[in-house]
Length: 264
Image (cartoon, rainbow, N blue to C red; front, side, top):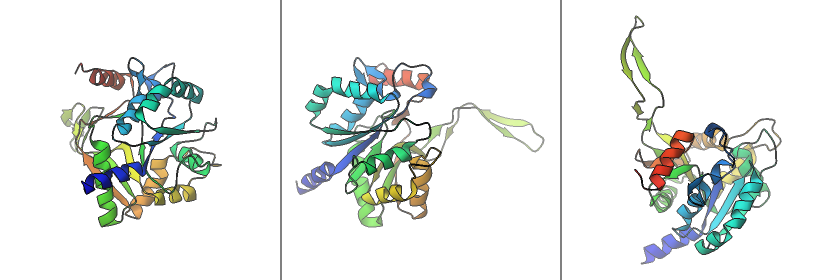
């Protein structure tokens, strides 16, 4: 019983940071920001993401929004009963209107404005990546705590064990002859699914290396993760192929709809 109580305490001490500022350019012409794409009736990708973590008892949520932020805020207001029933609190950071931003700046901006609690552990997640393993949040927490205790890591990055390459691949001999062709092969390469857990030390690095006044976009994965990797402070958590679905285009969105509504 003490183990369950301890886990419950760790859940309460973990904030959920949801990066929900995407425009969904690869989706084509859509009327709403990507996190507000519907999955089932009025439930959106964002609602699904919030509920995904709330069902395990996570209560402290931070939303980082940008593109068409007024629509996201309006949606949150409409869904206030849904949020109340989940028993959670949501703080929102609205990115400034600028072309050169990126997820690194979004996190730094939320830190500077006190929206992110820099003394508290966090799960960083994206609503447009569907996690099909309902146990993943608690598995990640236990795995991360083990890595912190035994390896002194600051972050755990969730990776899928293999990924389907979206193009055909050719093998060519020394004479330029194609000797083998494989359409959309499955590649055994560890791929980031957009879910991580981090300790407060990671926020210190964000403060140090992300410049809000830089004239270019700064991505969290492109700037912060290489530093952590060099310091050997990132723990890996491998999940099977098929337990993660990135919603990047109309085809993957249609697949998400099929999975969510039980038609596959």
